[in-house]
Image 1 (cartoon, helix red, strand yellow):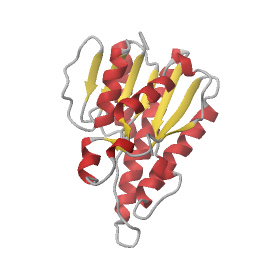
Image 2 (cartoon, one colour):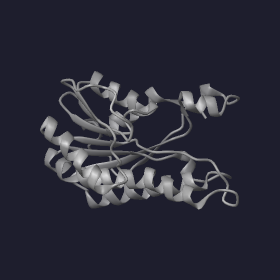
Image 3 (cartoon, one colour):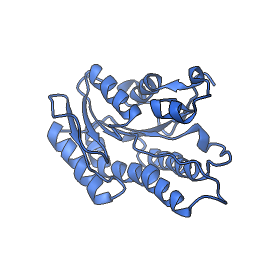
Length: 226
């Protein structure tokens, strides 16, 4: 990853922080984009762009272009920004479906569209999306989340076909990620069976690396020990 410039959306979240730190440790430079306020000052290997609503195409384009301008190029986009809600169809709110579609699908779409010219110019451009194992077969209460993450899967496949030979596009499909929030929400679960953020980051950064040049259109399950 040495010398690579990577944009990470959702960079202030539990997974985003781990991926950013791991990328920098491997020699990459990182631009973090998040809806939350920026909390890390600009350094030689990192900038953070906060208060960005990536579900808005204009804001996404402005942030992506700022990142590419700051570092002089863009080699990889890692779309981690997303959200989760658990509610049944009959008792839930239709607005939840709209909100999760905006946060999970539109953020990835808008960031990808804005990044494409920069990634093509790189000559080794990469897009890595975060889908979900739970979107392969939705369980009760998982409707809005599974539907939106299924949209991420289809976006990944479409972009891979459209950008074939120019930019690779893949998605990781984690099971439950071992984060503090998930432990709080599921205190009786077997945490040892979950995939850790470090393990998932390793897979994401492989797909963003030169070593994955022959991999595109993949929806890669990352199950942990389930």
